[in-house]
Length: 160
Image 1: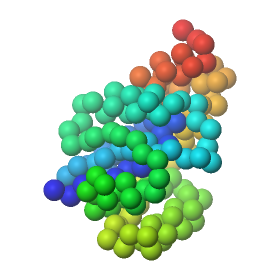
Image 2 (image 1 turned 180 degrees about the vertical axis):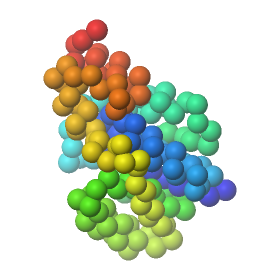
Image 3 (image 1 turned 60 degrees about the horizontal axis):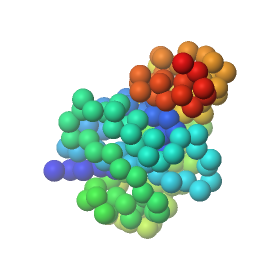
Image 4 (image 1 turned 90 degrees about the vertical axis):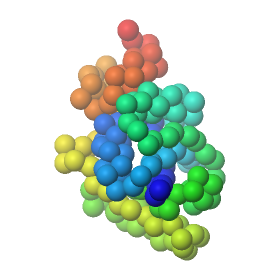
């Protein structure tokens, strides 16, 4: 079985992330979705909250597991037995950063392949920061995130 790792901050998980996961399932036997601890970011949700939202959002899919890690993505990919790393590309602006990361990961672990997947065009403008900003301003984000995330955002921002 070919297993792939899909790392991300997922703060929160969006429908764009889920679209990428669906596409990865078409190419690989198993997808490990992992919440990365990024010291350069100050997330709205805790690691545990993000893992729970992912598990709830992905509960109807087979061959998906959700975990978290702190450290190098390539090390975690090896730990879970992955053959590659999935990265989503929404726009050309994502490419330069992702390309540099893929080359560094190849240098660190030449046995892992980075696979770039593009989401459906309806998600190309979507990211977690936009969702957090909209939710913080009491805007409806139901077109952008799973129901569990809507509830978590309402709770985080003190709305019912």
